Amino acid sequence: AKKEQTAASSLYQTFTQKNQAHFIESKSDLKHWKDFFPAREKDCSPADDINTDKLEYEQSPSSFATASPSGQALKILEDADLYQIHFTYLVAPTNQGFLLIHQQAAHERILYERYVHVAKEKPIATQRSLFPLTVPLSTADAILLLDLLPDLKLLGYEIESSGKDSFVIQGTPADVEQGNEQRAIEQMLEQYKHFSSEVRFSKREKLIRSMAWQHSIKPGKGLSQKEMKLLAEQLFACSQPNITPSGNPTYIAFKRDYLERMFGK
Image (cartoon, rainbow, N blue to C red; front, side):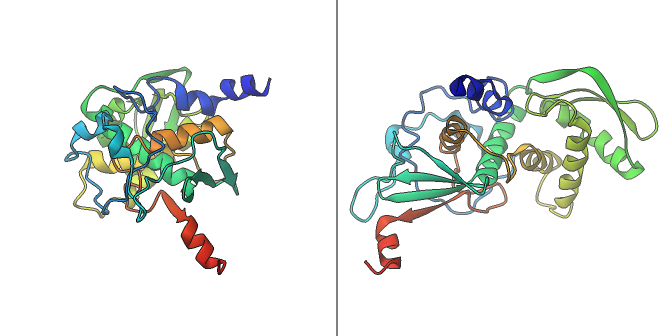
């Protein structure tokens, strides 16, 4: 019964169903995701410049491994359970210690790469609203949203202007909960303004970063074992799994020898 409840949960379904905003498409299986690859430089490529060939996830098995000083590849243990701490961090045991994964940072990276990919390939599927919602905005926000409508349509939003400073939300990406549409739009606009001073980012890049943050799993959200493993799997299918779009770490690796030194062993 517990297994059925997990499979039926909205969060688990958004991790597993196709055409969801954070579904990572692959042309090969991801059985090698546990051999995660080394940290890279903080190089957060804008969406307009990023090479989408990197998002096909066709890496050879060796590209998912990093050599340790002993020459042994660092891997997440295949049959080990993951653990959630403070509804924020995931602990993933490895053959050399463990990883501490920040669930929001990891999900933000997954969403960012997904949005970059679909913005250049095909639009995200839209979930039509049974009861379209009219959203009033300030004049400044209305002008901003009107400018973003073409890119928002590619990313799964169907929004129409309905007069002075008002918009009708006809549909949203599937991972936006019903009843939360207005808040999602308002928070996305606020996050977009956060990037307004970043002249090096295009409008689409700012929007993609804003949506990745807005739709990511926030601290305080409990995850099932399957959800945690799927999050880790999708993270290490990314082209840059070690950092968020803004350059913050998505996980920290703790090696056994480091832990032993900390305890004086």
